[in-house]
Length: 548
Image (cartoon, rainbow, N blue to C red; front, side, top):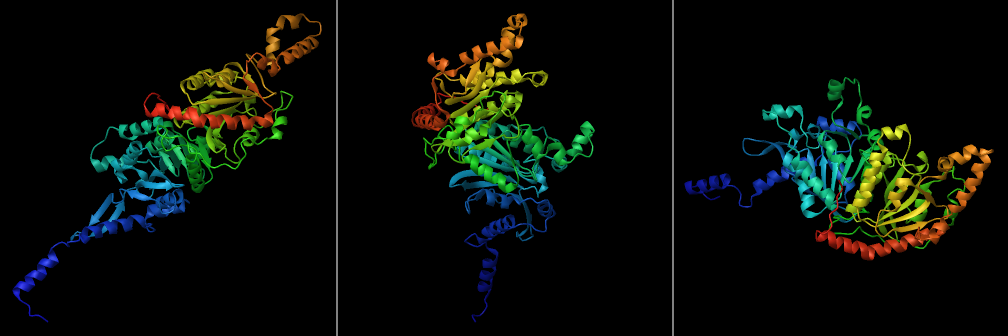
């Protein structure tokens, strides 16, 4: 062993005190923080509470949502670190918002996910800048953003005041400004409610293009039960009583209900399969199709009963006309006088709007009009051509309809039809009456309409309309019922839709079994020409669309 000299000892001390040339000390800090953040904190009370309630941990959710091994985290080191006296990491509480980029079916998306196990998702458990960062990133890069909401999603709590030492004036411009721009640009903004979504979290979920709530763990409210008790004196409210999944999926605040968190992720992946990543730059993604475009469906020929009092299932018509198993319904639990959703024909995504004759005889109420209006805007921002199956006797009537403001929302629906421009093809299956029917089937400069033999139309349905128009004649008749029967026979003959086709009042008619061939031909034409021109206009700024 070489003798120890003062120079040698000094060199050894210097080497011990000098930082390593490869920066391994800093890399070690990074590695330690990454390891802590990505390891389930099984002894943390918040984590234990999360699992006890049957909920997935935030990173388990991201793993289920995205393609395997595709997630790249952004802001992984954000959080509160406890440093030792010698600069070593003694402890780390990660930010309660995990975010980053990943892929869904090979397609890049951004994800922001709340970690309810850390301060219940409040702002005093995370950095506000991190919470809104991916919103700005989605807008800049034109990438879909998926929000897994569980808590206030960046909102504050009372303890924020104690921590900061002052009360703050709410500043929401950074949260909502980029979101509104995303919505109008057709950049998919999607939310899943996976826990009690409160305040700002509730707002961020409700504003999206598409939202889904897990029935077993999802809730939404402006404020929790304790705050409500102090404000309205409603006591002993449970989360479900105040803002359960079924409640908000039935009033239109949230679009779809899912049985579990896993089904939420499945619905999100499915919704994304129909829409482009950026409606200003892209058309909807087409898929290979093995379902014959001209497939005939003989069962449609007998779908509509001859007796007008009998109803039929519009879902049956939908499933026979679109590509096999391609219909994805949106908002099934609210606005039930209307049915809306997404589907494919010849592999091309479309929006679908129909009235529902099995609810309120198909008369559109206020909620049905709101539902159709939202879907029109959704299809417009995503360049989705719309196919309508019409069986509409008009707007809902009666005191309940008037109290609900049906005409107000009906006019809003009309404004939406006439302010959107995505192509529309209407199949008049049965009734098309009054203002509601007229708006639905006459909303584009070049009307594309196809009538079935069962179609009927006019200003008013014959039932009730004949009595009003011929009141004096019927009152003076010796046998009122016989007089009404004769008048009905005359009007039934005049109501033959072929007579309207004779005068080109309807553009085309077909046997129901042949309808899919007409739709497939139109969809192909639209994708090859009209939508391409529309996309060029949007890119050039000549066309403005809005989801508002």
